Image (cartoon, rainbow, N blue to C red; front, side):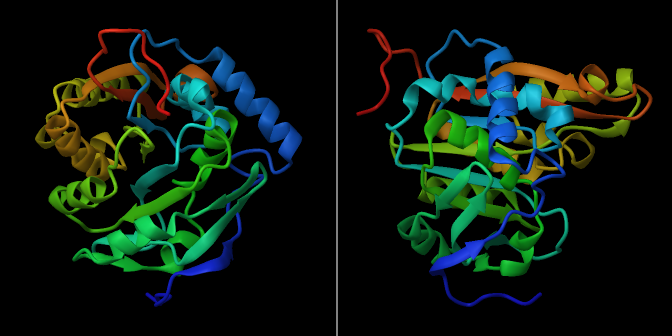
Length: 282
């Protein structure tokens, strides 16, 4: 794999799946994302520090992604950065891959990569820059329109997982975990290409493992973003976050046939409820 050796704040990553996974025109994209957010499941809990959201085409997973991001609507203008981590679907590599591009273009608007966070991560063992890994990858890109609709063009920290252990993922997330100014998005679909009932059983088992903060109970067939999820579960346990299954469906529920489905889940990791009314961070 050819790696870009230096982070370039001015370099622009162009969208790879606009017009395929989601609308390529800004107005149509904004309209569809707002529809998914409006229809999303309401959560009666403190706004989450971290979420797990799906990354398929919006026709299939958009309704579940709407449930994942909906609680962040009230925090627009209050968040300084969002860490996005998910699996590489196109490139094989060891460790974690950072993007060398300091700007990410989308039809919703342009996002700036948090250079300070990237510098911190680049010092860790097992972390490297790879333009190739990020170039055609959809797992992080498809989350950006939902971020723009809820939080605005917030600085981002994009990370892809390759062949890596969950301890390395947990260390990376812990490095950029920050305080209430930082939010985390783990991008992952759940089971792939089982029949409807089998997928429901597998996805429920995955949801149970997430709710139990039990990374060892999530196995490769259960989630393409398994490694990122397992790392998040480690840090969430250390941070005393409460996991919550917000929405659990599959493509047979949204727009697809039921004999070969892909599972999607929206999960929230919430801080302990405050003694007074919750407010967005200052």
